[in-house]
Length: 484
Ligand code: SF4
Ligand code: SF4
Image 1 (cartoon, rainbow, N blue to C red):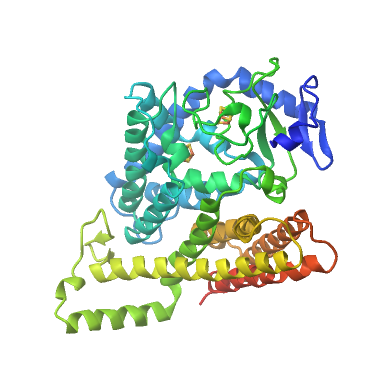
Image 2: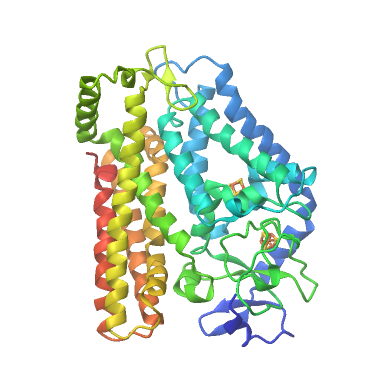
């Protein structure tokens, strides 16, 4: 919540939600929900323990079983079932859930975050070092985990799932054990978790937020001293990004602490200037969209195979024969029973292709956003070019989110198709999702430009490069929707 808005808020009135014209009274059922969550907060540990054992069963169970036979489905084979639960249900649904419930997955259900916090309780409690706190750290972590998930084929084999989630789990526990002063801190969740990064960024367009009842001016701040597990300085909280909805700061009867409120989806982004805009989020948005696109395209584009062959021949002509040999199974998919064996050539090709797609898409979207910000400046918008760029780029959030759901959550669409939905209907669902994402992005862009003081015909003019950008993202995903 912004200090500007806080000035309009009478402190004697305890339950308010952000509305278009200032502050309005919170609905009774939101107050009931808040009270329910607080009353049953102590039972969360049992949810976390159950989720922990469920997660272990999905991760380790398939490793102990023989590979699924041809024609196995999720209702007659546990390995296929585990794969479907992780990639077909959990992954896309947890994404979509941020629109309606913010980061409730993190605070209420996630076994990784809970394990990190348990480790913190008995750990060394050192101050979180600067390299961990660097804003780019979760972006690097996202890139590494996403590329690794492709090279070990985490979608195709349980060993791949074990590598990716095992690595994330180990890092979460080690980081929680080593760092985070005070009680029950989650440095992994705040600074390094790639899933938390995605959910946090997209929770900004979600309908849920926690706002301080007695806000302090000065802007969003970081502290390891308070009660918040993700180190939010509670009275100065302005953004949703790091809030995992643990309800620890909520005490319905107290005049202080935070309150749960609902808002129209997109409100925080449309008013991003009041909610701590951040350039690292923008680089993440652009890179993640490109990386997800690359991770999808290398699997289906015939041109990728042509390129791979050409690079392979070029390397062997130079005597680099080892490029055709498989590497370690923790780095690439090596399943010797003839099912799938990646070589170093595959590893370098997949990695380079994904990074190249990410760099290309980032370059195009950066250029178009700079154009939009420059045009807006020429037409009289406030702020300098850099800050206009950061604010304007938030408009890509909905289309980026749809990209990640369609690209990385493809298993759900495959399952829907296997369940009997015709191909054209699945494509229609994806087109609809993309169209909604694009329309929402344009609406946000329009509002962001308006918030900078542009009106009339100057607004759509400044919006034009953004229209080109979201269309470009949509077209780039064309093969994912209709096939190569
Ligand atoms: S940030 Fe990551 S590890 Fe932490 S609770 Fe969320 S998903 Fe789980
Ligand atoms: S702001 Fe409150 S609800 Fe959000 S993570 Fe911190 S303590 Fe939990």
